[in-house]
Image 1: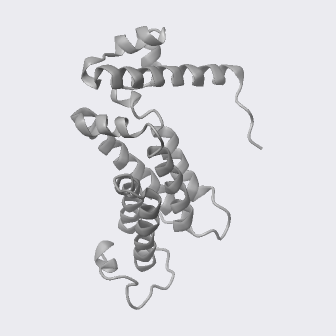
Image 2: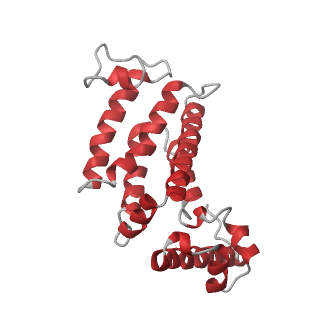
Image 3: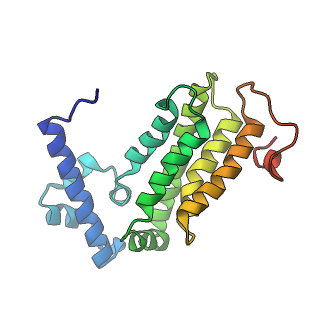
Length: 211
């Protein structure tokens, strides 16, 4: 049973949310490069040290759901029910992530990210870290001693699915289309000893996973 957070944890989470919401509002109003950490701290009525106790960098203020997304993706692997297939569990989580990233009001944020080199670089670093964490979770779930190329490749496909999906008119349909390819590639490349199909289910699947 999940234990409800205590008063201290709730207060800490509220402060973090207040800082992130304030920072995002200032970034969108004034421009990312025109706002400093001191501006955010003053507007949120907290000390600069408090900002840094919650966020490691200015860029992290824009990606305040970073750790949550990473944990949810790995939990989709490690916390799924016995015999629940891996790829559908990840598809379900990516659908939720894409809904969050394409919600009303998200477009100006992504436009700011796309137009700011520091934020683009931070997002790329974040995606790579998420992919490595996911690959480690997949390898551990299969009982492998280390992360294999197949696990890392599939993990990268899963992480990039959200990026590709949010750029099209129908993000949810795009997630389904992408995951059909991911599932086909995984069936070809899975390193857990299960039989593989004699022929790739879609053209180029073996090449896509390096097989």
